[in-house]
Length: 308
Image (tube, rainbow, N blue to C red; front, side, top):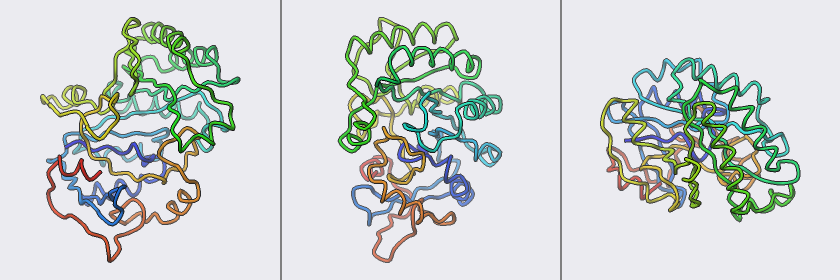
């Protein structure tokens, strides 16, 4: 079983105390986002977990407690982009985040820290030349601290339309995507990174760019030394190459304040949810209510994936 922590929110930045409590108690509750009264009980016994995939823009709050994960295999999807506060409102300075990236890599190894330059958005300020320049500078600093970089282009979800409209963000043409891809590929090669795209349908193979599996059974096999074969996650977009996993996060609960985020679609709900967080609760947000239905015990992976 693969745990995703989490595509839905930045658990490591804001809820690391909760995470380590769940690890200690070896179980977590997850609400079904399509039926909030339905809760799945997920067994976190290390013997049942093949790997945990962590997603974060700033895992610094949990790094000093990595020893609490000694019984688990894991790797990080670490997002590091060059945007300023009008795009990513509440992140630490990028110099600080880079140092966190390097420190994490020094502790756990470069194969377990994947750099995400994600997503690429274009406006007058963040134009193509800007991205190429910043990508090259970041790549030179991160050389030797990761084996791979994954990038994507912004998706214009309805729930973020108003946010991005205020910043003058425009659609990226196929020609522009190819210019970016060609330059990024050359920069990645010069810094000894492999490079791929996340959930993109455009074919960039002419530049040596492949399609990513961000939750990757091949990487997990390398990390664990066991040959793991897992089916594609049918609950993700068609272009997504990820294999099946169980996400233990909750939507509308991240404080990063990124305007492009699809996981936060209502700031009022986000603020309310953050206030509902209880570090000792088995749920990330709130607690179990009398009318909730909890599916206890060991649940088959295919059933869980239907629920989540």
